[in-house]
Amino acid sequence: MLLQIPELLNSAQIDKIREILEGAEFVDGKLTAGMAASRVKENQELGPDPQIQQRLNRVIMASVGQNARFRSAVLPHRLADFILARYQPGMHYGDHVDDPIMGGGKFRTDVSMTLFLNDPDSYEGGELVIRTPFGDQRVKLAAGSAVVYPSRSVHHVAAVTRGERLVALTWIQSFVRESERRELLFELDQAREHLLRTAPDSDHAKQVDRSYANLLRMWAEL
Ligand code: NI
Image 1 (cartoon, helix red, strand yellow):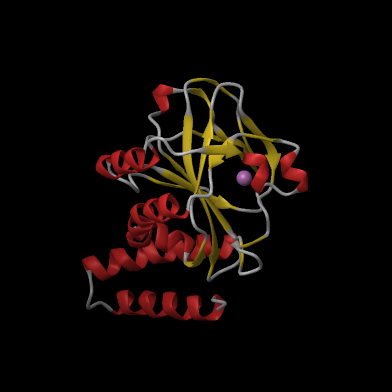
Image 2 (tube, protein in one colour):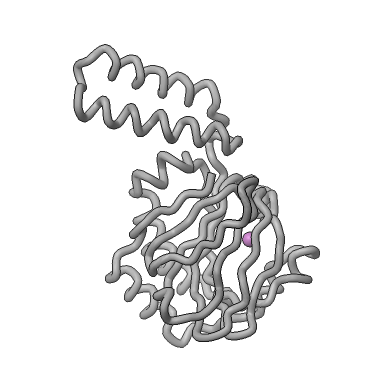
């Protein structure tokens, strides 16, 4: 499932990130790429500065952790620290799937997230293009909005031809490994929320609420 999370960050938080990044050093993205990916990866990533990394994570994680749409759709179990990636004119990232295991073996990547940090009008190109059974989906969102998609999907970043594409990336191990199951739970959760809001004492609300809980229990892996 490919899903947008609009306004994950507000403009004050985006400003804060820009302030943290002022003067920060970016390095060749190939340094963090696996063998196959390094052949197609042409971008820059924030250099390894633990203090900057920690400040960025604090700003971004607070919003991500509280976002109801993200939690319901992704069912996050483990989250990687964010990586900041920058694409200047001529930079791109060819077709690839994301690494299956990250954090030195600490977690599996089920869901990938791209959080857009620059105004889409301020750069040309730079769309995230995700291959789906229904054709390629091209994604370029407002600053502060994010997209989540299965880490197993083939995707690429189109070349930037003007301006600068700045994004934050993370990978998530979900409590529910299969994207089809997560999608079903996400829909059921929406029905459940609606019923609990509009008819909290009805038998239907209680049945759907219990079914959601027990289906999640059946499918969750810890
Ligand atoms: Ni990727």
